[in-house]
Image (cartoon, rainbow, N blue to C red):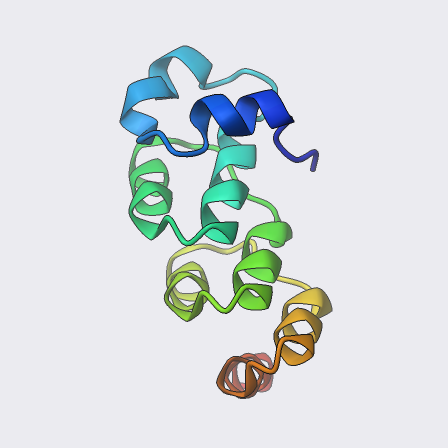
Length: 112
């Protein structure tokens, strides 16, 4: 999935999705890109809002970036509430950033 453009990130990255959702929903996967962005930037309250109010999927990049960036609360929420999951990049990113607890948790989830 394509990431946000610099312009999109500047205009929408810090905004509550309730302010832009009606205008942007259905515009080329914009909501999906925003879920990924919000996960990467630990904006769990916005991820939850989109989960409840939008039918678009996120990508595996959401969990991969959240794990890489150490956003344990986001990773756990995604695991419990979404089905997209992550890739080996989640564990690789967490390991490369010395996030041992995250690596152990991801390992346990993948084996159980």
